[in-house]
Structures are given as structure tokens and as C-alpha cells.
Length: 125
Length: 471
Image (cartoon, rainbow over all chains, first blue to last red; front, side, top):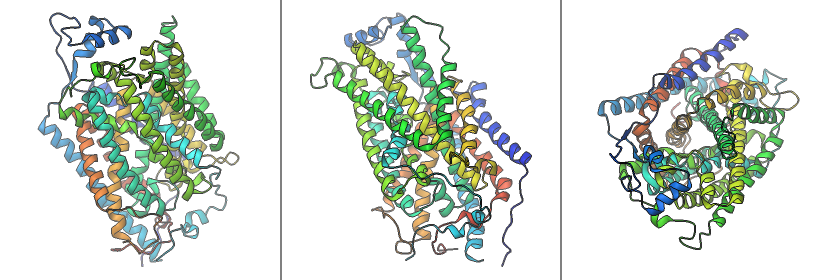
């Protein structure tokens, strides 16, 4: 029978370092795409040559609602003509899928290994 | 068959710490409702409408229904596991008992990240709303940041002082925010077609076709994200077996009503292109009616909803962080309870500046995407967890509080919907998806190679169950 595992006591400095490390990781994960300019949805914008409610394909009721919101055809044009770009890059899609699947496979396998330690200590001592 | 209750004697770590102070059990079903709905209701005031941008108004409605099915599966699975794993910590405790420490660490982080980012989004909304008000009243140069800090600081103080007052306040402001949605619905006279609402002229075909509908699933999650957080209060509820299901079910009913009313009113007043990028769509809808009274009501409703959500998020994120600290998955220092107020005060204070700093980026859809992705990872864990739960403890081997029907269909449906929603996020937000996944990969490696050595093994299993099959 394996002896019961006794974890080391972590110093205050070690606890501080671990908290700071995780905090830095959170910021890196969230700010790196911002800094590199990779955030924001992929989008396209096709502006008509002449901007008017008609060329923006807005019916009379829509025009009225835009105007109530304080927009003119010129100020609304950017919002109306910006569309999401849903074209799929197969390589990027495969890479993303591989990362997600790999992550979960890793989680399940390593968790199971650690879980066996837990169960062994809980039930075999 | 074995009793399901947890076995305190098994917690050797606790036994080794005789001065350990527990959280205070003071909450009832009303507080559980206030916690769940309080966190989520803000989603009706902002955020859900980005699904309109991705798939059109009709696409958003379809996404609302399909994601409703996802949450039905979540509720079915969660009801069985939560009613059986009678230990504090919600999905985090489930992962600890069924799958193992690394998965529990990740699930705990999903909860912290989902709620902290949601809190940041709430703070953003408060700032934007104040800016809009200032512009409408002639003060163009208002800097909303001091107000945002003030509100979050006051909520943090409230959370620091005690959970009962925190969630009592949440009940009052959440109920008031819900009432403002009902008032707006009545105010637009839905019984007189065309009088105020212009559905026949504003609703369009699917602007992106069916791929847009799938893409809309990403923000469809925002209609409901966080309702599962009610089980974070398990350790502070007087009667968990009664209060948690009652508070959660009435909460889901409230959200379904609010989501339906919100979509109906907004899609009948705002062109879909505007609605798809609006920061405060319900407030905008009130402006469109031309009624100052409705505008004031919706201003107050949006402010209250954002405040209630931030309040609930501080509560839930700090509980998850506290639980991880107590189990040594995170530094043990965070596992402290305030000796007088019995709140996880260090966790509360630690997470506040993080949320505020993200709020100040000003990027609402990015912050919401990070919150949604963390929630989505948590939902992806659930079907795996459910399959393992039934495999390790088959029906009849332990007493379950509830056995959900049609297993494994809900687990399979939930997994398929999660995969589809990952794909929906990839459509337009692929870089953020990849960045977030890499974050979780790195922290998982960090946990297994470094933090796990501080974890007391046997303490991770406190239920009085027999040994799981296959071990």
C-alpha cells in the first residue's frame, strides 16, 4: 500500500507568485489578441456608390426608425453595409478543432490518472 | 444502496484545521432566484442582440429556441448530478467527485472566468448607459469610469459584508428590472397590430441564410448564461434540496418570459442592422416609443439589471475561487472566510480589479465572447461528466436525488449543440476562440506539473459513496 501523500506547505511568497502567474496568463490570453489587432469579427463592407435609404435597401418604415434613432443615410451606411464574413478557412478550422479535442482528451486522461490517486487514498487506507 | 450525504469525517484536511470557519447558511428560494435571474436578466437588456447581428432577427429567435434546448439538457443533467453530489461548489464539486482534480480545476476556472467577464460586461453597460444619458442631457464629455468604479466598489463592499443583504438587494433590483420589461411590453400595445410595433415591415428574411442562424448560436447563449450558477449558493442555503430546484426553476421560467418579450418588442421597433450592434437595445426600444416615462423606466431597468448581474457575478466568481483556494487548487490564502461576516472576502477583493480592468477595454462583444466561451466549455464538460457518473455509479448503486429520463440522449444532444456552438463562435470570432483555448491548455499544464503537488488527495472525495466501478 502506498503511504498517504502529504503535500508540501507552500510559502506566502510561493502563493503570491502563483496568483500573479495566473493573473498574468489571464491578461496575456485576453489582451494579446487585442494588441495584435486580431479581435473583432471577420467582416466585409460593400458601400454603394451613392448612399441613400433606397441604395441601402431600407423600406419606408425602416427609414423612419433609423431617423428616430438620430441617423441619416450617411451615418447609418457603415452599420448597414458591414456584414460578417462567414467564409471558412479549412486549415484554421481544423487547427481550432484539433486544439479543442486535444484539450479535452488531455483533461480526461490526466484527470483520470489523478482521480486514481484520490480513490486509492480514500478507499485503500 | 448507499446514502448520498457527504461524509464530513472524510475531510481529513478539515479535521486538521479545527478553526476552519464555514460560510453562513441564511438564504432561501427567493435569494436563489435573485442570484440566478439577477446574473442572467441583464442578458435581455444587452448582449442577446449580437445574435441578431450574426443571423438576423429571425435567426436570433431560432438561436434562442435551440439554445433553450441546450439549457434544457444542462438542467436535466445538472438536476441529477447536483441532487446527488451533495457537496458545495456546484459543477466544480461534481468534477472533483466524478472526473478528477485537473477537470475540477478547469471547471472552477470556467466559472470564475465566465462570471468575472460577465461582471466586466455589466460594468461596461453601466458606463455606456451613463454616457448615453449624459449626451441626451447635453453633457458630451462625461467620463463614466469613476461611476463604474464606484458601483463595483459598493457591490464589492456589500458582498464583503454578507451574503444575505447582498442577495436581498439583488432580489429587489432584479424584480424591479423584470417589471420594467413587462411595463415596456404593455406600453407598446402589442394587442394593436401596427400601432407601435412594426414587425411586418422590419422583419426580414435570413440575411446570411442558415449559416447565419448557426453563427447566432454564439450569442444565443447570452439569453441564459449563468442560470446554472444558482448551485454556487449551495453552502449558504438553509434547505438546499428545496430552495435550489425551486429558485432555479422559477428563474428559468422568468428568463423564458423575459427573453420572449424582449425579442418581440425590440424586433418590432428597431431595424435588424441597428439591433445587431446596439449596446442597450431595450433602452433604445423605449426611446423609439417616444414616451419619456418608458424611457426613464428602461434606463432604471437596464441600470438595475447590470448592477444585479455584477452583484451576482461577484458572489459566484468569488465562491468558485474560494472553493479552489480551500482545496489548494489555487493558493490556500484564498480559502479564508471572514471571521465576522463569514464571507470569502479575500476572493471577493482579488477578483474586483480584474473585472474592472477588462471593463475599461471598452470592447463589449469581446468581453462577452470570453464569458460565453468559458460557459460553453463548462457545458461541454457536463455530458462527459454525466456518462462517467452513470458508468462509475450505475443506477441503484447510490441514492440519487433525481434520475433524469432518456439517458444518454440529453448528454448526446448537449454535446452536439456544444460542438455546433463552438463552430458558431469560430464563425467571426475564431481568433478569440483559439486564444482562450490556448489559455486553458497552458493553465492545465501548469496545474498538473505544479499546483497538483499541493493538493491533498483523499480530501477531494467527501461523498459517502462506494468505490467507483473500474477503480
